[in-house]
Structure formats: C-alpha cells, structure tokens
Image 1 (cartoon, rainbow, N blue to C red):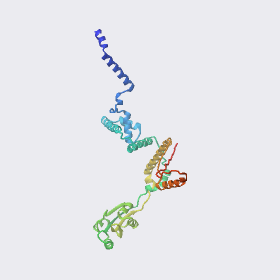
Image 2: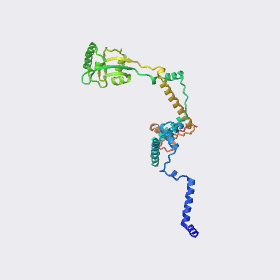
Image 3: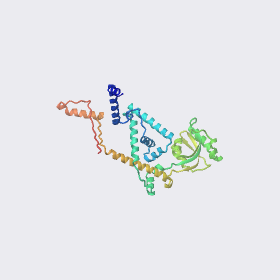
Image 4: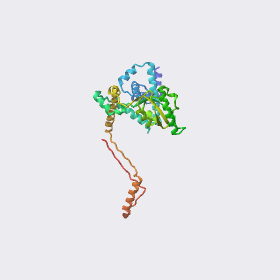
Length: 336
C-alpha cells in the first residue's frame, strides 16, 4: 500500500496539480474574493442600500434610513434590492459604453449630487422673531402681494361680422333693456352673443382679465362701483363691445404678517439654506487656482485697422505683413 502511495506521489501530474492549488490559495489570500474583480458580479451590502435610499430621497440622515431599512419586511427589502441592482447594472453598462465621457447631463447629475451632499452638512439657525419676519416681508413684499380680483358678468357683441359702429349701437340698445329689466348676474346668459372665453368671471385676478379683454377694459372693470343690478358700458375689447355687471371687486393688497407667518418662515429657511450652501461652495472654489486661457481673433474691423497701421509704419524697414494674421488674447485669472 505504501509503495503505491509513494509511486502516486512521484507522478508529475500530481505535482502540477498541487502547485496550481497552492498558487490559487495564495492568489485568493492576496486579492480576496474573485467576484470583487468580476464586472458582472454585484455584491449588495448594507451601506450600499443606505446610500441608495438617501440619494433617492435627497436626504442624508444615516440613523433615520438605518431604522427604515431595519424595519422593512422581507418583500419590501427585496424590492429595494431589486431597484438598487437595476440601477447598478444600468450604471455599469453605461460606464462600459463610455456614456459618461463628455456627457453634460451626467456632469450635471454629479454636480447636483455634490450640492445635496453639501446641503446635508449645513444647518442654519433661523431668527423667527416678529422683527426678523416682518423685515423679510418688507424686503420681499411684492412676492406676497395678492392681485386685485373681480366678480362680474358681461353681455358681448362681436365686431367680427359687423362694423364697430353697428356693434356699439347694438350694445347701447341692449344696455337700456338690461337696466330697465334689472337683469341679475345669473340671467345674463340669455343676452348678447357667445364670447371667445367665459361669460361669468368669479374672483378672477387682474392679469387674467387683462389677457381676456385687454388692458383698457381690465382697468375699466376695476374702476366700476360694484352693483347687483346696474349694468355699465359698453367697453371695447379686441373682440367687440361688452356690457358689464360688476358685483364685487377687491384691490391688490399684502396680507398681514399673521396670515403669512408660516409661509414666510418656510421661505426664510430656504433662503438661509441657499445662501449657506453658496457660501460653502465659494469656500471650496477658493481652494482652487483657476487659469482661463482664451485665444481669440480680433474683430474684423479692429484687426484690419491694426494690420494696416502696422504695414504703413513698417514699410520703410521692409517688414513683411501677413494680412490674414490674427491677434491672440490671453486672460489669466487666479483665485487662491
């Protein structure tokens, strides 16, 4: 038996296999798991999923998402893994095709991710005192101005198929009838002609009214005294003449601080955050040395003038001038 074992051990093939096994073990010890170097192998780790969840939510809070991940059921966790794997595969395939090379969209996504990362490290302390909030409202009052609004109905006569004088005459005759009958708001539909837009306008802002009737008629509507029976006009629009019954109108105004406080605090917080992020980005930029080298030809007029002047001044010394030459400008800016 021992003789057979010794003879087997002397076989060159056995030596070759043993050497291969030793080399394989050494390679594994040095390089770790072979799948790590396999471009088609994806290892889903806990930190991968946490990072995936945070970037997808645009919120970087490790503890919050760790609790969320731990609280997932098996089916929900598998769905998350499938979504991560799907994105990872598409990302690797895009990288393999070099789609990220000189791609502006990919560049912008990286920039946006850097902004999100910067925002996650910034915490602003907001001054929510009445004085600070009122000062913010005063500085940004136009952003919170409520537009003028009006509620009215109108009777319309078009100038598309008749002259301006005919349309005005019809409107004037109709005005007398409307006021004699005290036609109310809800019965106006039985008079006049179909208008391009609406017959009744309820609490509509001034800019919408102007877009439907023109600026002049919009101004006239807001100058009228509201009434439930007094028809007025006719007023001309780009489409014809209108008889108007204005039942309610309110001037533009800025709501009091008490009505806007919640919105103001929210806007103040976003503005403070934006300014803090921009300040942080500026400080990062200051760590770079920026050199701008722009080589540009002079404009045709100035270029030819300079060339001709140079030719005239150098002709006595037999200098050669190339009229097709251009002037290079080099601008260097350093931010250190």
